[in-house]
Structure formats: C-alpha cells, structure tokens
Length: 375
Image (cartoon, rainbow, N blue to C red):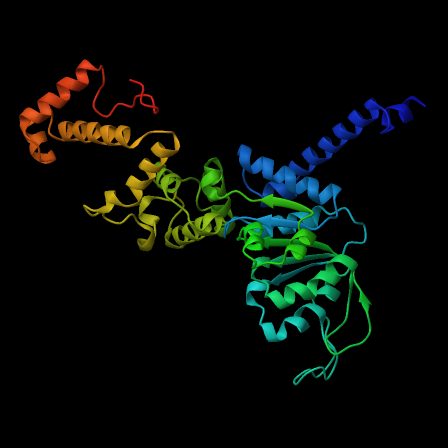
C-alpha cells in the first residue's frame, strides 16, 4: 500500500517519484557506452541538447524536427533517437535524403509503385513508407521537399495510409518520423516556401543542434575521437601543443564534419608513433600569409560587431580603435615617439597631445572603459 501511494501520480509524492525516475533514466542513457562513444562532448550546451534528444526518444513518439547548420550531426541525432526508442518490436531506420530526390520519381521513392505504373516500372516496388513500417523514417534536408510532394505527405503522416503509384489499394504504415533541416522552416513557412500544415505535423518536438563555435570546449575531445577512429592502431598518442592551439583557434564553417576532414588530412600525412605536429597539417589547411588589407575584412568586423552588440556607440568605437593603434605603434617602435608617429601618419606633437589627454583621463592606450561610455 505504501509503495502504491508513493507511485500514484495523483499524489504530489507520486509526481515527484515519477519525475525523479524520468531523470534517472535520462542520466543512465547519457552515461551509456552507446551515447558516450558516438555523441562526443561534455560541454554544457551539448549536454543539454543530448538530454533533449534522449527525453524525446524515451518518452515520446511524436514527430521530431532536428534543426542545425550543415555538419552539426543531424543524422547522428536521428540515429540516437531511433536507437533509444523503447519499442520492443522496433524495425529499421530508413533514411531519405530529400535534397537528392528527382521530382519525377518522388512518388515512387516514398509511396512505391505497382508494376506497369509508368515506363520502366517492371515490377512492384516498396517505397520509404512501407520500408519504415514499424521503424523510423528519417527525412534528411526536409526543407528541400518540392511543394507538390509536401501536399502528398500530409495524409500518410497524419493517418498512416497511402497508395502505391498506379495502385488502388490503401495500405497502412506506422513509423516514428524524424526530419532534419539546415533551414529555418518557420521562416520558410512565413515566406510561403513550406506548407504550414505540414510544418505543424512534423514538429511534435523541435531540437536545434548547436554549431561547433557554440561548443568550443568539445573541439579537442572530438579531435581525439576522430584520431582514434582514423588511426585505430594507436600510432598517435597525443597532440603537439602547437597543433592543439591551432585547431582550437581555427574556424569551422562546416562544423563537426569539417573538423573531421581536417583531422583526416592530418592523419594521412602523419608518419611514426609520435604526436601530431604542425608538419602534419595539410598544405590546404595551413594559415595563409595575411595581406595588409586583411584587417579591414572579417577580423575587424568581428571586433566591431562585438562592440556594437555590447552597446558601444560609434564615437566610443572610434576612440578605442585609435587608442589601440597608438599602443601597437609604440610597442612596435620600442616606445620611440617619432617612429610611432610616422607609422600612424601623424605628427609627433599630435601623438604627444593624444597621450597626455589619455593620461589626464586615467586611460591607457588600448584600454577598455565601460561600453556605455562611462569613463
């Protein structure tokens, strides 16, 4: 009786019990070898995302939309949901890349066809809906679905019934639906490029996978994981500190996928049992010599963007840029005022006045006052 009272969801204690039990199941899944060996990373951002995916897999059968930039691991996330799905009679995961579907053959790809349905249809064929019956259907790059096909998917997703191309018999199917896209589908709906009714059918849950720049703490663990995969004979015991620093500061527009390719190229060049060194970096990945105009592009834009986002005004940004330029010119000239003024294209007198003014305000050239302009 006492056990029933505690586990009865109608009691407050029962609700607490169920919640704690749910958390324990999620934690156990996160610590399992299957998750730790394939979903690499322990940053707070990545762990929170994994918890979302695990909860969806264990406690929901609703359609799920996975959003994220290219290379963030959307198919891995879909496979995780399928693997953790608790259905006892679960069947296979069926993957359909919507970006490669030929419009003329899309009906057959999804619905299958009957023999003689069109020229070349020599026999009956099962489509993705039949193959995914009892399992999971993963629509990768769902944002690429042609408008006509979007309309055709509505019935089967909602009611689980469909007809083969060229057939008259209604067939049934039941599958867990997981979609992925690198687009903002909600924005696509507003622009009229994606059907609103289909969007609401595939978004029983929405998970956004973070980009690699949002989980930089996971970068080196990912590198070590990729090295172990690519070179399983343990020929690489460590990363040279210079290589680790280079990998940590490099940008990865292609996210985890690009990182893996960079590591693959390094491993291909590596020889011997020692660590990966700067000499292993592929030629196409090595930092290019910077030109005098480089600073006017992305590097400067990043600094200015950060200042604007933190509330700095145009006057403050200009003042800080000038102060920083003076400090750099003086440091590179070993404190020689005349040499620094020549580098900056001003007179020595103007530079003296500027430095004196900063000392009166208690500033150091290149220092950073309050972003709102308080000094």
